[in-house]
Image (cartoon, rainbow, N blue to C red):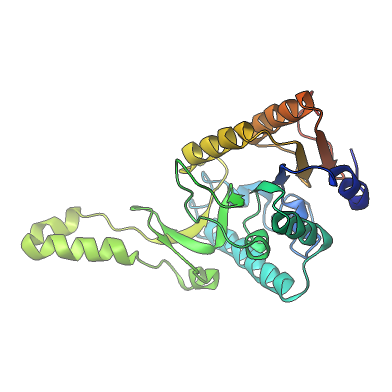
Length: 270
């Protein structure tokens, strides 16, 4: 386990197929608060309950708190992108330009890694191909409908503070149906827009695509895995990282842990 980035660079200097698992902590180096910390955006807004699907929509106060967190992350990320990328982002960009970066699985929702590394799929395809950056938890830069799940790209989250906004696609569908049969108006559900981020206790709509991408990268025979600033608290991601490290270890590859914290559960293959 290494806390020094320079040590990691030396370890990876001969590796050609690198997979990176990035956590929320990577963004703190760019000025975006770590949502898990007591001083971070969630610590100031009620902890993980601010991102709990069972609680976020229960009251207006909870909803407003959630929107504040989303707006704060969005603002801090935009400020970070106006500055030069931090060393970690620069290294990832260099690895990609050299053709040595297989994938970056990011738990961040701030889009900094997406901008630096050149884009991603807002809704990843089930069978691939997948972009270099795979967003596991969505992005604060987009919105989605609560009914039809349509995604609105480049949506300014400050608009959520003005109250619920109807989904244009749902509205159009309802209008089309009621033109021929006005009695359907009351029975045609229409959704509202919400941030396109995955909440705690919420079903992941991209689960199949995520698992397929995991399997594809395991088959690519990576020779290095780098875990940056995450405790791997999500069970699916922890299992994948465990399998990935074991696969790399069997081929005499290298696994690098860059964090001030230990993993939530042991990684025997690390």
